[in-house]
Image 1 (cartoon, one colour):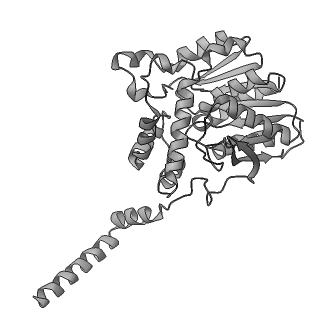
Image 2 (cartoon, rainbow, N blue to C red):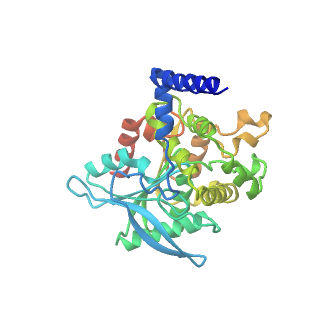
Image 3 (tube, rainbow, N blue to C red):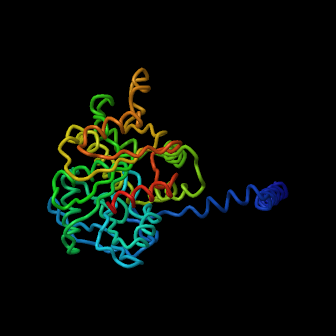
Length: 341
């Protein structure tokens, strides 16, 4: 028996050695070993520029809102651009846009909203009004009087709310494939907070990656960086707190539409719409017979452009939900042309 046991151990060791010398399998093992937990406030993940914090007290909780304040690389033109991130992203995904704008003389402020990125992840009542007020506090603390506001995806809903609340502060409003161009309450069945939370807790690397792939017409390996941030955060012991704040912000999006107030927007507005975008928040719950009629961004973009007084629409063909990734040169060109007017 001892001799057989010894032979078995040797055979297992030999098998492991064989596996590790296989180029494909050894690479897979190495890649798996490199996936390390990331704290839910993303310590250990470097942003392109220095990150600062503003202290906030919300519902009796002491919180910190992270932001980048990037000064112009070229001769300052006196204008400040505020970049507002989407639901499944954070401020650093604007890094190429920041570089473009600062090289053109703009000061660029990029907050991580409460509940996102390097900011605190509290269990509070999230609202676009609250996030807009937080953003205004940040701008005021920096001594900035007027801004160009650029909002992508969920950031587009927030940018709209900000422009409605603080019209004197917004000189230009840029909405890049904003969600909420239609009222999701009319097309997506209601889901209780507990179910939204459970969905976050039950997500996997595969499900996260598959969801991110829906944003693009042409997937590139570079985009996987944002998948792996989410995957690594999910491995944190504190992930349940992040899952709850994420569920609460999904609830915010569902319950607080801005599309009915587009006619009240007074800022000069640019809509940039990827023509292949079909995003619907809660799409998996939409009835099959309704799917061909919802999330139709080409139609929604044209409809919204008619609702916002004097707005300009730029349609980008063969691009999905994130034009500043898939078509950065055209996006930046149109952005610059608009904000220089």
